[in-house]
Length: 152
Image (cartoon, rainbow, N blue to C red; front, side, top):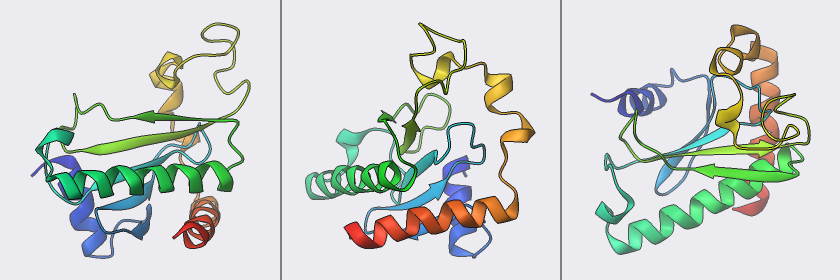
């Protein structure tokens, strides 16, 4: 079973503390690490590796829902800009990375602190200090849930 399928199984078993909301085509979860406050993922319910493998109606709905999740994250976490990524080189199950961005969030990395999130050093991004406490996680989830409820 792939990592994303394992995370989805945890959601179904009510064991995934990062789970926020189930939508028609996917699950909204917060990222385990929150250097970029409000970092959210949208996990496709179907185990597919490419967008073009989804039936047309499912694909359109998946993209629409991803856009709504991104809008909710932008509102909830006061993003100056959203970054969207659907890579799949590591975990081949379709899943979107949605990063709310703010000035200076790359610190001194990149071009004047501007650039893609992957310019930020991985050892800093995935440092345990960027894992939210239970209280912080609940606060992040509540903010995102509130905005999702407004948009949906």
